[in-house]
Length: 484
Image (cartoon, rainbow, N blue to C red; front, side, top):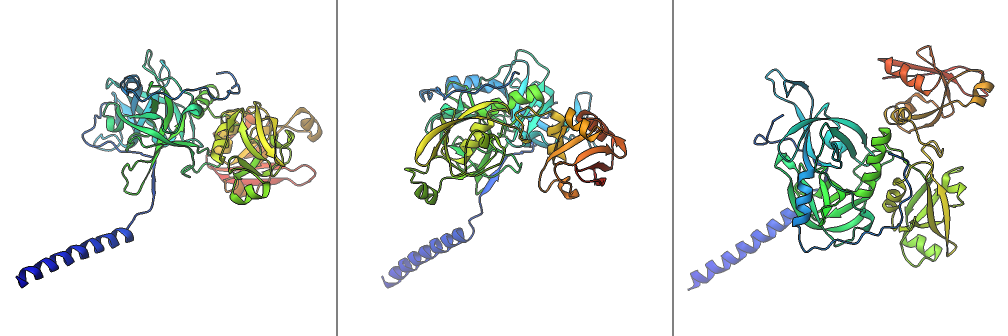
């Protein structure tokens, strides 16, 4: 009897020790949070066959969809979601080749959403950015080559097009009206498995998870618990009616697998970016010209606010759209065009829906009183005009913005050229020590007449680039060089 009792005690103690050690190991080895924007290579079993200017939207009137059935939403969405492969290589006889053995070199894959019957497809920029050839596989397993219409790293969106007609496509829903707790479906085409559908709810809105590196990045994600796995990037987030309310972009995980946190770019922002890319080949973004931050407990106390809702203006740039409209440091913005903004991501999203020159109504609190101001948004050069694609390309690639000299400047200076209006910190141009207001007159000793001429000359240069010019009121000629 004593031996039996001894065995029982030993067994219990051993079990407790095992549990204790296991928990200590778990506590010591919890991995850090991983943010995944899925660029999933295709596994061996996968199929290897080869607008007008925007107007200000009004306050949302969308009614949340009912969760009675997912069949309608799934049947509408699945034919409009495609599989995308980004490859580095050459096309020959319908196949893509890169190495000595004739194997295609796939650099990434993901999903895409058809948004028009004539073959426009929206996806994530990170799905396609490393490929020089894009292959789109439709729901019926037909594969077509796609061309890039435009990309926007600041929202991680891209617009591509296939040569087709009569394609099933999705309509945009009003993402501002999407409600927390509303049922949604995530539809993707991972690993070319013919649109996979998962269901969940909207967990939160206006989430910023700090995954985009672009200087002008906009992160105001819809968070859901619908299962999103590698290969779903660029796929559709739809309501139970089958209308598009977001483009699935990322997940947060500790294990590297789906754990209940997925994020989608809201459809209103997607629609604006797509319209810009179709019309201009690049995104026309409006700016208030302010520095902003969330309302903290300290700010709320000092301003005697009743809640932490709203966005605090910590700086208003001189001569900006905000200053011209009468906004000041210390104002707290509460809404844009009647749409509440409770945090900085929400304000960034609402402003990003507009182009330079668009007028928006901004409601704000000052000295405990609510007021309203009409703000005419400006471009990054602080002008209320659309920017040329050439200028925007210069900004993204080299890090500076240019404009043509006006007739008065040409007459006063006695020569043609282009003026530098701004320089991005840490860019190629910033490394040359060039300053704003520099007037460029020559590239590699070739005379520059205007911005179009500047771009034409620059495109023909391969290697070292020498920019020659001057600053007004300074007699010297200055030279700045970089390697293209």
